[in-house]
Image (cartoon, rainbow, N blue to C red; front, side, top):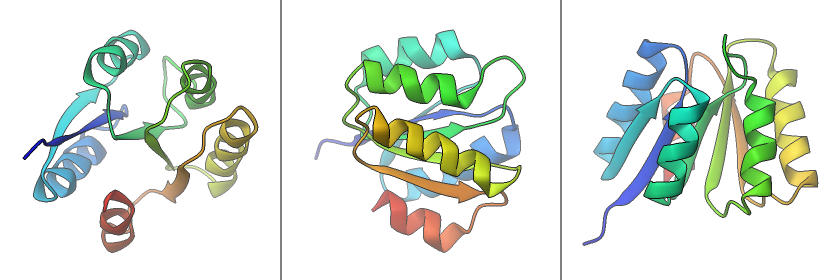
Length: 121
């Protein structure tokens, strides 16, 4: 059976560990990044089925990455997460949708595990 790839970019190690644990329980191969250049390189080589993207990070703006994914004609499901006001994730989702991303969901931190698991299925 071909395993699906999940690509994560988040600056919070605890969130990345949780995402990895949940995704691996659903038989995803998981790649975790914290830097935009590593994320972009991994995206180009992995062909992820799902991307988990933090909106607010110290070195990169998640909205910029959403725009980059749209420019790359990304077909992966994009799950946008934020530990800040949910409005940040909604803005990123709306920008992605306007630029052609078709499958985008949003979550706030701390993650609702059952809802997150359902989003990965």
